[in-house]
Image (cartoon, rainbow, N blue to C red; front, side, top):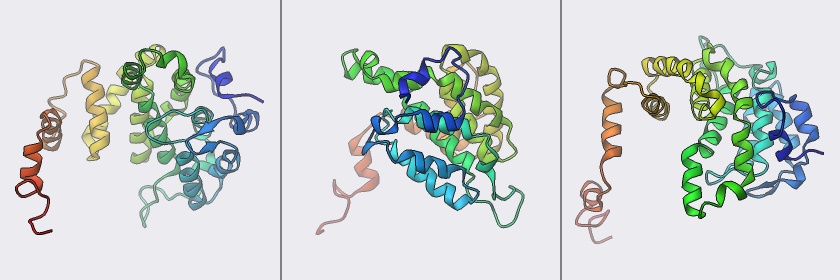
Length: 267
């Protein structure tokens, strides 16, 4: 059986194993999760390829919640991320889902849900997260916390699965792919892909009103040295100014309470 560390030592860092190889070749019961071990994950992950979108939606919640807690990369998170990446382009992940032009509107696409999770996990392992943890762990974090190192080493392989969806016909899928690709592109071998991602970020800013996704696109463009002034709308500016304001407890109480209370006395 293969553990999480083995996948990261591949001589081809951008090559994904077959999803069945990951499922059958991982010693899931030996890997930690927030709630115990990953022994139950193989059955749940298999249901991500069910032809019924409702079954896939439940499986995605069960499997991804099992390895997600408090922005932490667990041992079982690493092979789950590999498995999710390996099945992204599998035809079953889109089976039974309506075209985005159809009526009634489609459910949240399975691929968008999987990409959302990959993106959130990639942000939990980005350079800022590593720096924060190293400060709190007296610089021993990088050496001792191998699941995060393993995930970070696998970013080229995960990116190779995400990249084809940047131009997907479904807006939710392509936007989720961009948000996932941005933190993955911190890896040194992926920095040359940032010009491509910048074009997709501009497209997202021209078409999406999603606050979280717009923030990620604007932050990336700014970090990569692009002028975003012409891309911001009024809500972007308001959100940026609010974030830049120092925290002021008195200002919070003035906006949310009366004389220091959230309700007018008596309670």
